[in-house]
Image 1 (cartoon, helix red, strand yellow):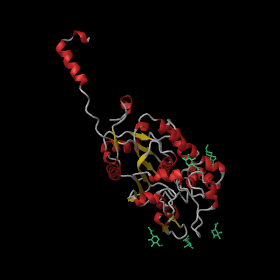
Image 2 (cartoon, rainbow, N blue to C red):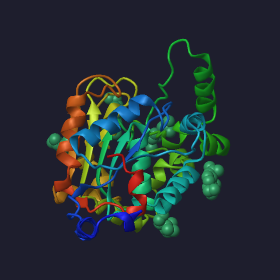
Image 3 (cartoon, rainbow, N blue to C red):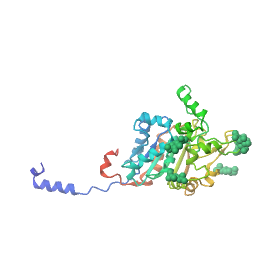
Length: 326
Ligand SMILES: *[C@@H]1O[C@H](CO)[C@@H](O)[C@H](O)[C@H]1NC(C)=O
Ligand SMILES: *[C@@H]1O[C@H](CO)[C@@H](O)[C@H](O)[C@H]1NC(C)=O
Ligand SMILES: *[C@@H]1O[C@H](CO)[C@@H](O)[C@H](O)[C@H]1NC(C)=O
Ligand SMILES: *[C@@H]1O[C@H](CO)[C@@H](O)[C@H](O)[C@H]1NC(C)=O
Ligand SMILES: *[C@@H]1O[C@H](CO)[C@@H](O)[C@H](O)[C@H]1NC(C)=O
């Protein structure tokens, strides 16, 4: 067709085509979102959060972490599975993702158990490297009670029955997710129990509570620019709720030992002290019960920690750009 156009038009066309496109505006770093127990990566509520992130910071590429492309199977994986394998699977997915793997870094938002799982990803893999991690109502110091069922949910109660019957058994530790972040302590001494230290398939490991510490875990976590931990003021689902700040609670007296007074911090087993000393560790509260997120608090997070000022890049190469929701 082109040869039918007058020469002047052709020249104009050539001039337009040859004009270099303006440099891409600084784009915010991609955002990883890891959902909680009973949720799935395709859920509307979760995408509302991702959409808000894009409204606040246009150009953000949001990736919803999943264990399976099928939303139903992804939901099942929040209850059933071996967390060592689950985190390894997420590590492989993110490292192979065409957009994420080309970014110089990413931000991460973890809801409830998704918060400590993101921490597991950072400590064990961290490709692409996480810059700013924000967790809401997570169980960083584990749970001391299983409190996740509605009053009439018999299937859930059967599940809890399994958890309670044999928390430290190999089958439970390799198949039931919450058992892998259950943490039992002796109230008299305040120390974790021997069973926990020996058999916990996830938490005792990522918190470097065993004799042998993994230096990579500490190095990776300490490399964050910010680690922000929100606790819901009236959380009655996470017991104890202060777990969201790595605090320890004496179940008999209710006495709370703050992170800064704990050995994990003083001996800096996972880099939390290093983060604190560079002003990168934040303890926050938000009103309401477990996972009562408001747009206000989310907007505050997106503006405060995930804006292009906190880390940006030029965006993915052309061929993957159509995957960006702009
Ligand atoms: C420490 O963690 C890294 C990252 O997961 C792993 O490659 C390494 O084998 C671990 N080291 C030990 C001593 O377990
Ligand atoms: C969980 O999976 C890992 C990797 O396959 C395996 O080494 C470990 O023994 C499993 N955990 C349990 C408690 O079986
Ligand atoms: C807790 O520790 C104390 C002191 O070492 C010990 O006497 C007690 O038996 C422990 N309690 C449990 C339930 O293990
Ligand atoms: C926990 O509380 C009980 C009851 O008040 C108390 O006897 C015990 O010494 C406390 N444990 C620690 C480690 O402070
Ligand atoms: C740490 O413990 C000391 C002494 O028990 C107490 O005065 C201080 O308030 C505690 N610090 C935190 C951050 O809880």
